[in-house]
Length: 476
Image (cartoon, rainbow, N blue to C red; front, side, top):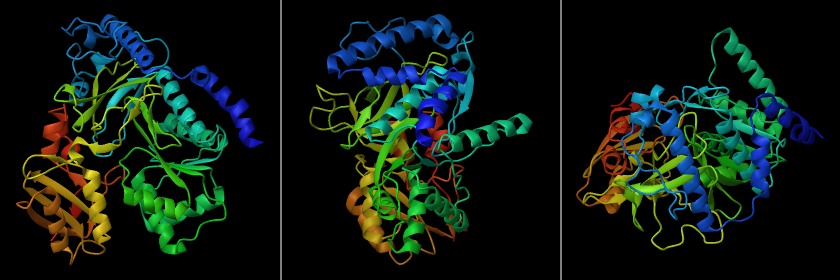
């Protein structure tokens, strides 16, 4: 009865109170018939043309742009090359206020992203943008059989608003989350006591789905497996939704083993919204009604088999247009044709991580971060490490004294050289623990070398924390 009350009364009333058009968007998404590849491209071209026209008419930053060409509404290409500049985080840091629509109607929301590397971005959005993100998440969960009002448990950071008004907002948010069966459990700091409390709450609450960062879910899984020896609670979730961070295979295996549920992934960014969600068949379905995705290398489309940066346009970002925005995230374009099925929606390749997560071989080739990290964990059984590549032929291995690579240095060095080149120079730094990021996420690889080769942002990626490794404390 309670899920029905949430779905039919509380949720619609809440969205109406906020003047957020989530329900009309949901109905549109539910009623939409399967579309051809040609239809999707025409739709996106028309939407981009309208967005660019609005941006140049209403937003000071885009009004001052010198390139006059607009994408033709009937073009077979979603976003023609060489007609619009690529937008970077560095550009937003410099010109954020000029990028805002000064006469935007309705509520203007100032938001801060919570990135993996603590290189957070301040930007603006409105209720419509919020509604699209919310509706697309609801639709993705519905594909898995999870409906609005069913119990969800979110392992997210909580950021206090501050002040008397902020306290009131935080309290209202807490009450809303519990009423809607979507409580949030803050795990920071990731202590044993905090994780035990989270697991106790999980077993008592018994959600249908758990949502969280992979590193948080992995830490909880390790804690559960340590104490339960593989046993589960009497009623486990149907799905674990991993989002906000790169998910490695070793993490997926541990999480599924500990919680007895399948892990599915979601890919999105605070600044541009929900980009793609994994469906029951394992495909990452792109939200083409909301997001246009390009994969670029040095400003051109990446070739088959080549790594490239994901560049996106949010079709509903009118308050602060995100047009051809370089996300900093990397994928490998499939070697064979067929990344987009002719009879189905666009799909996205599996994320390789941020540009600085990719590695470079000694002869200058790019190498998958996923492949190397999973191989290291599989062969050594160790997850407490971080690799810092300072040059194509140099890597610093950071690990800890208790539970790290002590005694396996030769094995690790040989594995790294077998993948990255025999001339690779490997140095070591041993410490007591890793310095936590503000987000409490984890970085297993940091390569400023790959960042320089792959990222379109040549400024903020290098001078802010996107190109910094996770530091080890009390190093010898």
